[in-house]
Image (tube, rainbow, N blue to C red; front, side, top):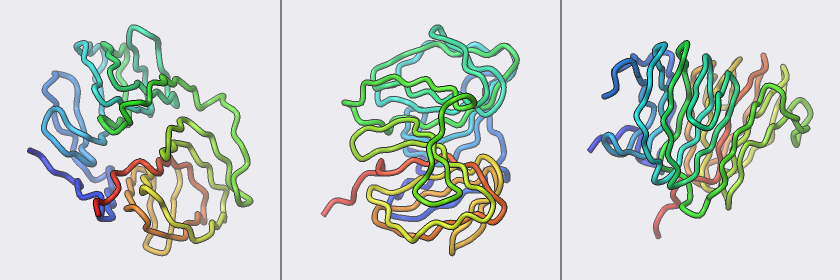
Length: 222
């Protein structure tokens, strides 16, 4: 069984821009594997690239999926999702995706709570953003269930956040600009996972846009 950054008690940083695209079992669909626990049925985070005209078979998401369309057109029998569209398909849902011109998506699989039954489709390009808890931050909530929260957060140039802890962990994918904390600088394409009860003090000198998911990692067993 494949294990890639599957120890949720460890901090992990992946520069996806340096990863190779690898072929999936479906012709015309390639992936960059970011984290994975399992083989073809896996709890996983990946970048997935569809070539133009690809039709994927109907499949079920036993434990759900979340994805953000980064470029191109992603479609299924329920709709068409352009760049910046966030979709959460709940546990037990199924669909048959396809693309006309090709697309790239960031996707998370098999990590949702079995009781999280809400489907979410949100175009982030024309949604309403809210002021963050410090000046220079704006937040677009995408999904909330229990302790788990998913949002886009935009940092203006020179924004500094306070030191804080992550109950249930935190996962960040940098979409634009450079995100920073006391451990390093993270340019666009960087994925960072911080474990349960870890802490840091983030900032952004030049500004950035990040996808953030918190409170969703399996808690350590005592």
